[in-house]
Length: 117
Image 1: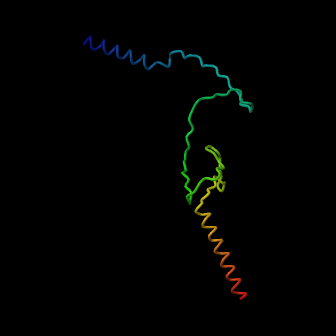
Image 2 (image 1 turned 120 degrees about the vertical axis):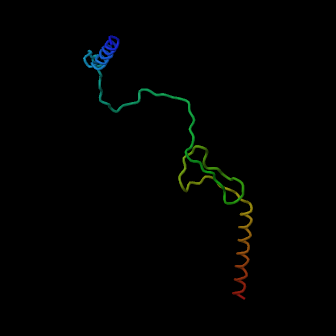
Image 3 (image 1 turned 135 degrees about the vertical axis):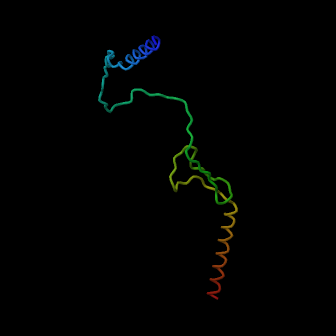
């Protein structure tokens, strides 16, 4: 019974000490200095190595086969909708255009001869 009373007394004493922590003296508050921000020049620059990766990618395909005549932009250039990126020289299209012009001219002569004649 004496052991039980001694153990209960020790437990009560520890509980009282842990619950009375607010009686202990507190550490003084740390002084803080505040400032008001102002606009001004950047006085510190930081340069770090890194890689930039595009969020989106687009693969461009030509509607006709041919050879690149001119390239107006390079990797990394900013472009807008409607900007000319490159010109393609397609020999097949040039040949077909010349043939169509020849046929049109020939039919114009035939029409002129038929109307005059």
